[in-house]
Length: 331
Ligand code: TYM
Image: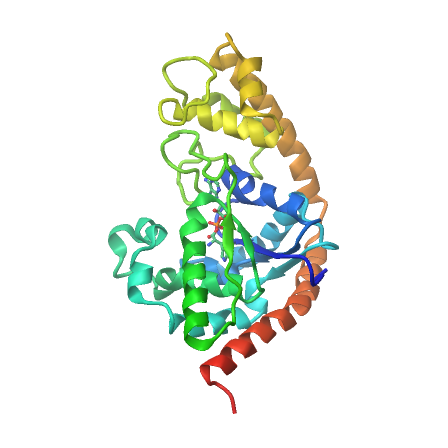
């Protein structure tokens, strides 16, 4: 762990709401294969979760749950670091330093804030507005070069790049400039009930998403009920056939098959047959996934998070100290 000549990767998931297939396909499923080649750090970003109201008990459980999802997705704690954001205080501290580099105009551009705050921009928390700066701190603390995420986080990674460049320009070389890594297909998994809208955990309709902990046979039913398009050929065409294109993407990533080979397999066949097969595949996949998820005890997870926080703290402290010194916060 922490080999000097390997590039560093950082990513994270908020412990809020149910982890869904969009999170898995867009982000987590990208991570495990990167562990051999890179120094990987995967964070349970609990300070991001509290930008909106959370029940304290539930939040506590979800921190443990997200860690189990990381493990079930194939993250190996012998190869990668998995830790809880709030256990390393350097995140909040660097966020403050970067707050003094970020501009109101930067944050006013953030589309996720606009979507989340909607008409309530005056009453949501300051934390929700400032969230991308904390995310920049997460990334920049660990000399991160690559940030594997779904498409909705790319704008935030761009801001982290911009803040790093601005800081380096003003105070001298301090931060590595990171870049987002998104899947070519699967960076934006769409809602099953409405394939023109992103699959999301804050969506109230449970027919929108498949949660990774959904009852597998219920998940299969959601696939069968997923919205498809009027012209019933199994063809990838995001513009005109968003429903079937989304299902083809899910099939392709989960079962490691090329989209054109799936199209060939189902040439001349109808949606019903394709959906039935996908439903069975998804059901079996979730059974195996949940078996792995349930094999970890809460105590194991707490021990893992604590010991890995010890490992990353010195890396974070080193970057933070350097940034403070550059700014002039030293004696
Ligand atoms: P979060 O918790 O909302 O989502 C976790 C990951 O899932 C991806 N994702 C999707 N990918 C494809 N299709 C979808 N429908 C879909 N919905 C969500 C997200 O892009 C993300 O990669 N701000 C981040 C967490 C974070 C972070 C970081 C990430 C905090 N600090 C530093 C990377 C680096 C977030 O809220 O993700």
